[in-house]
Image (cartoon, rainbow, N blue to C red; front, top):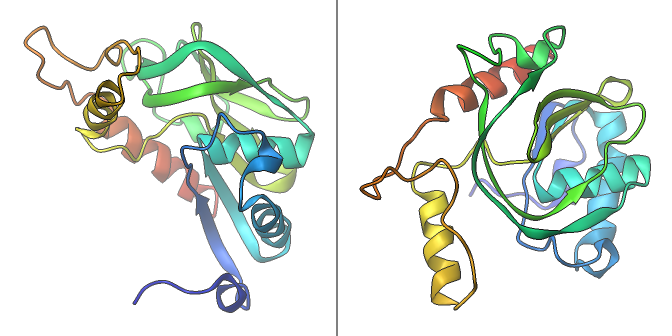
Length: 202
């Protein structure tokens, strides 16, 4: 009952739009079935949405459309919980975080990476995996390379899925304790990330 066709939803203006990812990152952008529709939604958002947030694969797709940035395949999957090692303290998107006491943690689950385009601010990054939060203020778009929305067991389910497919994959980093119980360490970070983004509307 909550779903609308885009043609109906597009008749209104919105304060905020979130575009989530999909497991299609190993495909070339133009091989994705919904690529033309995605490009249309991005163009529409410039005129009808105050702030847009794009996550994981959607972030890579958005960076490609807006800045002509291609993605590169990683030698091994970026998989686990990563903490920001560099924080732009001047960015409103990182308000309340630092690289010591109040860590910004984010689940990551991807086989590809995008280079940093000029004109985009890196608000938080990790030495091992690169950018985590990027912001293009000139077009009111924020890009998250990971998944703050993941629940406690999401990475576990993905890991078990890949093992069942006989894929060669290591356990998600910084996720399981030694007894294989989940360390749910990113909940507070996720809440603050989304709150900081919503505060851009004020």
